[in-house]
Image (tube, rainbow, N blue to C red; front, side):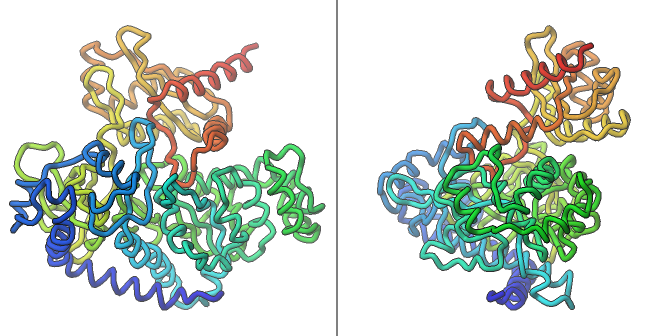
Length: 556
């Protein structure tokens, strides 16, 4: 271990404590600095940044914005233009599909990279160290299983691009200087030349390494999916480990097959160790049985992804989880407030300038950090260092506490992600709550779920897909659960504007097959969030076909 994780993590914790304690002053300073530095840009000139003398003038002069407002400026940057949104030129373009599925580009400056690096990247290490104050550093950071990857992709103009979660690592390795020696895979696997599914490759290395100390990912569902993959392919993986081969059925290119045979010679001793755990590995505490020295896991879970959070608890037992960040392509603007506490993210005062629009909105100007209250729900408006000004994140957050003067928040739902048959606007938070009630009352473990509006039926209704064993009378049960979770849905049902939902059951592994299909078509999965609301026709056809096949198979 060549990196001094303890010193750098400790310094990050000191920064976090300092900025949280002085958040109000830092926020005012952030706004002044951002406006002054970017006054001469095309965007700053248009909205008169140089004439802004107060917060009130900023809010009066600069409009609330969405991605569409920036597209001409971003296209100019991609074509080689300068000084469009920021005086500091972007070093990366984050690719986001947004809510429509159409790829969009979001510029990222070096200043934003440094915020990510100094507060989040090293902040995680600092929190892990404070959770294990007496554990030797090599036992915490000695060998990391990184579930994601950081493919080095570029735009035609040569600019680095990709998902936001990979941006920091690409930036750190822009001159080949990123130290990957503490990861369990070779650097070439962490930084592949193109986006492809390397799950088999990473799993082979991880299983071969006895002393994994941590698992890192963006979302817990990627960790769960990887552990599911190990369980499904347990015998195959151990056979390949024993012989040093790559099974012919593994969808892997000749390039990686050749590399693996050279990197991983036969290891019958480790294969025997693992096979002794069980011929078919069981999920309970599977992580600690394979890697007894593991100390923590990184990945976003909590109420937004309850199915995967429960699955992770089953796999990992009592291993603490750092729930990483609340963020988006538009900004990595928070860090989990502490180890093993989901749905509590500390907003970083130096990430930009924050405004909060009360939900429901009753008029008046947006609030600042010092004006929000615990229990309040707000739509987040964000001004960052990369050229987004008063940007509507379309996320509703609830303030659950404060660290010093900085709010600690939980993500509730996205404003544009809702089921809406008769103006009930049932959001993903309410849908998740209804599914938790359904699971408890049906005594079923739901592996995953998704839903869509069904207007082929009159009146309209919800079509809900569940990956779980079939439940008798599922439609009326889910209807009752939805009515408990949403007053709007209950009112529409009472008025006869919505019919009871239709529940369709999916065979095991349906969501993993869906994600594998996305990966085969070139979708970068590191930042992919589990689908919950089906909007695209292709997705709807996929899950309908899975349900059709399952129902045909179950028919006598």
